[in-house]
Structures are given as structure tokens and as C-alpha cells.
Amino acid sequence: MKKTIAIIGTGYVGLTTAALLSNAGFTVYTVDINKEKIDTIKTGKSYFYEAGLNEFVKKGVELGTLLPTTSVEEAVPQADIVFSCVGTPDKPDGSSDLTQIYAAAESVVKHAKEGLIFVQKSTVPVGTGKAVREHMRSTRPDVSVHYISNPEFLAEGSAVYDTLHFDRLVVGGEDNEAVQEVVTVFHELTRFAKSIDASEYAEYAAFYNGKLFNDDPQIITTNLESAELIKVTANAFLALKISFANSIALLCDTSGADISQVMHGVGGDRRIGKSFLYAGLGWGGGCFPKDVSGLLAVGQSHGVQLPIMESAVEVNQGMPEYAVEKLAQEAGNLPEKTIAILGLSFKPGTSDVRRSQSIKLANMLAQIAKEVRAFDPQAMEEAREHTDEEVLFTGTLEECIEGADVVVLATEWKEFIEYDWTSVQDKLKGTILLDARNRLDKDAITAAGMRYVGIGR
Ligand code: UGA
Image (cartoon, rainbow, N blue to C red; front, side):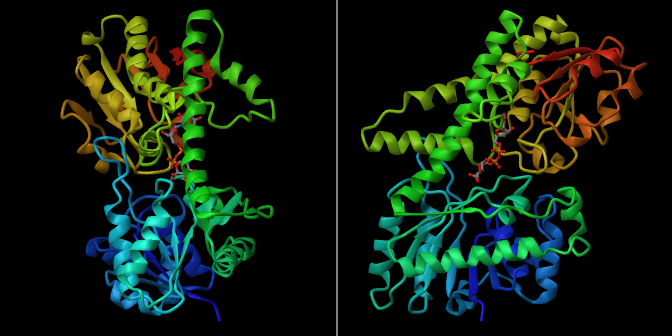
């Protein structure tokens, strides 16, 4: 019989994992202290937008294998395995706030049955696992709980795909049997991924163009500390790649090179790879900024400076400002201009606006320009509370760009990239289109009568 699982926390990682495991045949309790979130999940849908997720939530609830609850007492005593997927926000000094980590571990261990496998999926600073394990032992000396670190690599916007078709599984821990149990859960998930009937998960299948199979993922087993550090280092390295591309973009702007061509050529080297070399507004979201600051903080506490990451942060912070300067140069007097911002989420495919560089840009422009309007296909509601009140929200792309002197592609949603810009050719003749993510076809935009401006091209 398949194991019973409890997942603490219903964010992108928790709910996606819970929904997919419940579809793969496990009985899964999805636990959150927030009743409103749990009530929404009980109706068979997610409370945030994530492409393809709703149909797995719905199916899990219908099957009765996905059990949303606010009660740890109800879920944990039934569980053979608990995944902790709670938040680790950064504190004002950049270090990680582990309040939720300890609260989750403590509430779980209080209700744990003998031999429970406690899997930490939340991103934590290296060394946290050992400390949490000790804390659990001292709270409940009468039960033995196996502590495992299983960092998550899914990205928002492709969370379902990444969870089903993961490249690598990292499982760190000292008890080999517990490590293997966790590996088995993911083998089951891969088996499910390969068996998916596209007609049952049409939204997911359409989203990924019917690409439903994967190669066998790498299974990497390590000690606790290595697993913890793999996660943060991977995010830091990806952030570093982007900041590196952004630094070269600045040089492209002054030298006549085109960053897209340069990175296409550079990334053609298999040792480097093409991904995460898109220059533009820089990185945001709920992960890179806090994980990089967390790494710097943990480095410092171990007496290790990481100047390379400090520089990556500095480059990133400067990118929205650079975009404004470039716009001022190209468009002339910004206080006389009406600017349309397309995209507010921190990346496409998600309604998440945490540390969105697009919002940062919109707010900066709102202080300078005559008028700033914005449109996002999914993130308007979430964006409102982070956006200056001067920024006017519009209901459609067309309304947003109507009569604008400058159009800015701030977040590269598919609908903006695939938009037929020739259809607004008459209205936008001579308008500047700042492609702040370098994703539009420069020639097509120019052919549509607009002035194309990129970052580094
Ligand atoms: C990131 C990692 O990619 C995941 O592997 C990891 O699991 C996740 O953090 C996490 O720690 O939970 P995510 O933050 O969802 O995922 O999004 P990314 O696709 O990594 O994008 C991060 C930021 O970098 C976005 O603002 C994006 O616009 C920017 N970016 C990305 C670029 O500016 N250029 C690129 O070439 C790629």
C-alpha cells in the first residue's frame, strides 16, 4: 500500500507537490493554518494562479486522495512521511527567518508516529537541518523521527511541469532507509508522469504542447548539509548568470554589439548553456533575492565573504534604473510622456509579484512620466498593493497602449510576445517599444513602424 503523506504549507511548492502526489495514488493531507486558502482548495482549485495546477487539485479532491485541512492534529498522526513546505522569508539584515520552519517542525513532531520521515523541502541555510533535528528530538525524546533534506527546484510558472519532469532529485540525510523511502515517492511520481492521459489533464497537456515524457532523472543522495547548500548555491548561480549577462548588456549598448546575439553565441558552448542568460530588468520573485541574501548572511556567519554574489546583487538592483536612463535617452523628455507597462508579475506564467523588477520599473516611471498605465494578464490584483497609486491599471493590452508614447514590455507574457504588433501599426507609428526582457523580434517591431529599444541591443 502506498504511503500516507502530509504536506505542511500550501504555497507553490506545497500545493503543487500535494496535488501531484495525490494524483499519483498517495493519500495526501495538504495542511495550512490559513482557513481561507484551505477552503478554496477544498472547492477543487488553487488560490493562486499557476499554469496547469487547477486540474490536478480538482482531480485530487474528487478522488478523495487530496485532503485539505487546517489541522495538523488530523493529518500528521496518519502520515508516514511529512513534507515541510513553509516560507523562509528574509529578515531586514538579509538572513533567513526560520520562525515557520521551527513552528512546523514542532507541531509535526508533537503528533508524529514512531518512525515518521520528516522531509524538509523549504529552502533553509546550511546547518538548519541538524539544529531542527535536535530541536525535534528534545521536544519528543520518545519517538524517533528521520530528518531528510529534499530541496525543491521547481520554478513558478512551470511548477507542474518541473515537479513531474524533474532533472534531478536531491535527497540528503543520514538514515539510508529513510532516504530510499523518499526516492521511492518520486519514482512513483515519475511513473505517474509517464502515464498521464492528456485528455484528463487537458490544460496541462496543452500548456506543454503534449510533451508529457521525460528521461530518467538523476538521483543524487548526499549528507544533510550538502543537500541544503546545493539548493541555495543553484539559485545563487542562476542569479549570477543573469547578472553577468546584464553586465555584458551594458557593454553591448556602448559598443554596438547585440546581447541576444552575444549570449546565443556564448551559450552555444555546452559547458555554459543558453539558459538564464537573458539580459533585461534582472531577477526578482520569492526565491533568488532572499536566497542570495541568505547565502551572503550564512557566509558571513561562517567568516566567508562572497564578493561575487554582492556584485550580482548590485548589478541586479541597478537594472530598472538603467532601463529608465535608457528610456530617457531614447524618448527625450519623460515628464511629457505617457508610458504603457506590459507585465507586472516577476515572471510570466504566475500571478506572483514579490520583488518584481517590473513593478519597481513601473513605480520609478510613475515618479517621472506624465502618465503610467499598466496591464498584466494575471497579476493585477496582487500588483495593486505593491504599485504606486499613480500607476493606472487597464483592463486590456489595447487599452493600455492606446495613445502611449512609449510601450514597455516589462514581463514577457506569451500573449505580449505573440501579439500581432502590425495590428496596431497605425496607432503606434513612431512609438518607442522598450523590450525590457529582450524577447521581442526586433525586425518585426521595426517593420510595424515602432522604434525598438532593448537592453543591450
Ligand atoms: C527559481 C529557480 O529557477 C528554481 O529552480 C527554484 O526552485 C526556485 O527559484 C525556488 O527557489 O523556489 P523562480 O524564482 O520561480 O525559480 O523563477 P526563475 O525562472 O528562476 O526566474 C527568476 C527571475 O530571474 C525572474 O525574475 C526572471 O524574470 C529572471 N530571469 C530568468 C532573467 O532575468 N533572465 C533569465 O535568463 C532567466
